[in-house]
Image 1 (cartoon, rainbow, N blue to C red):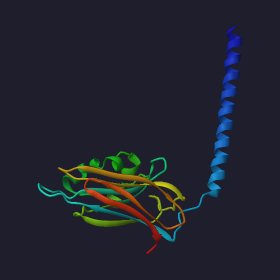
Image 2: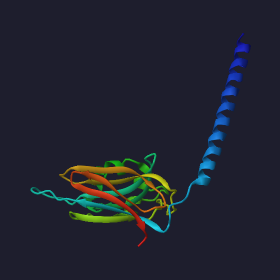
Image 3: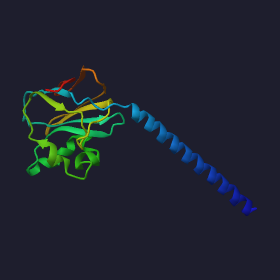
Length: 197
């Protein structure tokens, strides 16, 4: 009886494995078919990401840490466009306050194993209006596919609040303007897909 049972289990195992293999092949073929239809980000375009950091009155004001980055439709980081931090002394320990940007190991260490923080970071800025530009490339400098992406702008300030504006947009071949919103001191976040300047 145990011999019949082990034959049954091995037949079941064989059928399960065969079915999984067939499903994997089908998914691979579908991905290739979809990949053939996918167009790359138009290299004649760029995306301007506009935002304002508003200074609140009263109390001690520390310049905020700011991260601007792009995630794919699944929420995986594609490109850190700009990172404003103090990267000397005790400043680096506060980069963790950029909670969403910092949460992913690949984001902060770089997808190629390099140190992304030392590569892309620059000094913190005072309150004001700013524009940073995404060239449609990932962290490895390859053009991404057209499609849906999350535009993320995050701000955190020592002795101050935390803000995040994150919104999905569809990137295609046509010019695009869209308002993404505000959160606390992070005001009027918007994007413009435009001709490269």
